[in-house]
Length: 173
Image (cartoon, rainbow, N blue to C red; front, side, top):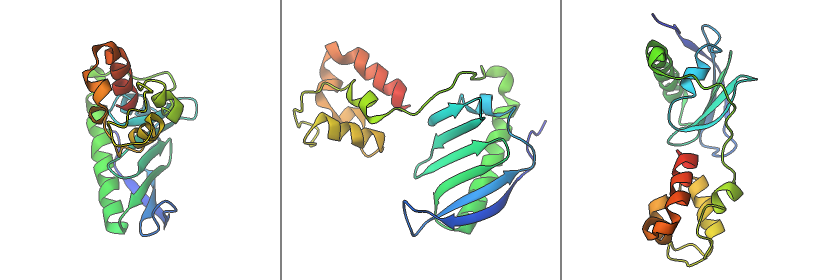
């Protein structure tokens, strides 16, 4: 059974974060409320609020936010890419819906990790082995997906930090 027929492009606006890109807005052919708890099980979830309902994913560049009757995709190159992303999103929603019986729907809110959440799990030695001046700077790089956990030698090699590493892996997806 197909859950969603289409997402119609309704608007494009300039992207403030990257002026040479656009934000694409779309309207699904039906409300997404039923599908969002299953979509919230997918990787790269930044936040999920079942009360609104709203779900935000991190994409390779930018973000994808789904509401019941609206979709936003940031940092899109042009209208053609936006249309393709909307079509791909329809396919992803339908594939997830088709497999919903294998998934445990998410019912609790999930928020994006904050800078201090990430920093608190790092060694906090400011050892500079990652080529950042401080662990706080490294945390910012992790949050922006410009750095990886493997780039922190103490975190990667110190067995005493394995629980912190596991926590960060879960936080950062």
